[in-house]
Each structure stands twice: as structure tokens, then as C-alpha cells.
Image (cartoon, rainbow, N blue to C red; front, side):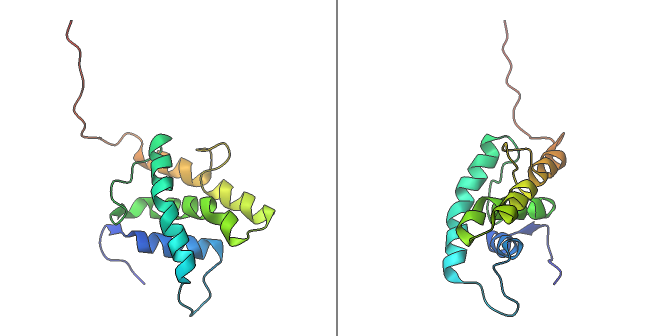
Length: 129
């Protein structure tokens, strides 16, 4: 299914993260408990990404499309322990997401590369002597 528009929603992100975790069964709807768990973790994951200066997601329902795949990998890695991932699968998901130490994974590095050098449109703070 082609997504029209430039932005994706948090519901799309949750669905993609659950698919990356292998939780979604073909032709079956999402389990509401799984969706609620990932939804509850999104805010803390977004705050962690901002704190690590990887990216800042201002609105969870307006996620830039170019960030989407990397964010889904990060969310899947951060939520993997709840879904009974084996130690090998957990290590793989974390390496694809934020990594260990935080910020060294493939998803984090991709987000850093995408956002590097982009204008922030912040006002420049200056000190006059």
C-alpha cells in the first residue's frame, strides 16, 4: 500500500514496529494490548532520542517519512523485551535500532545522517561585550 503525503502517524509507526518484532500475524488485526504497550513507550522513546540529540519528533502524528523506517527499528528494539524475543533476536533488534551504547545502532546512525546539516530555524543567541 502506497502512503500518500509526506508524514506518517504514530499508528503507522506502531504497526511497523510490531511487524519488525514479528508479532503481527498475516491477515490478523493487531492485539490491542500490544498496541497500547508500544503507544505507552513512544513518548519516552521520543524524549530519549531528543536527549541523545539524534532527532526531535515534535508531533507523533506527523513523523517525516524519511525518518519512518529508522524510527520503527528503534521502537522495535526498545520494546523487544516485552514480546519475548530470544537473546539473539534481542541483540539483533537493538543493533538495528539504537544500539549499545545508545546512539551507535543502525537506526540511530541513519537518523543522525538524515538530520545532519539541516537548518533548525532557531534564533541565534549572541552575547555582545
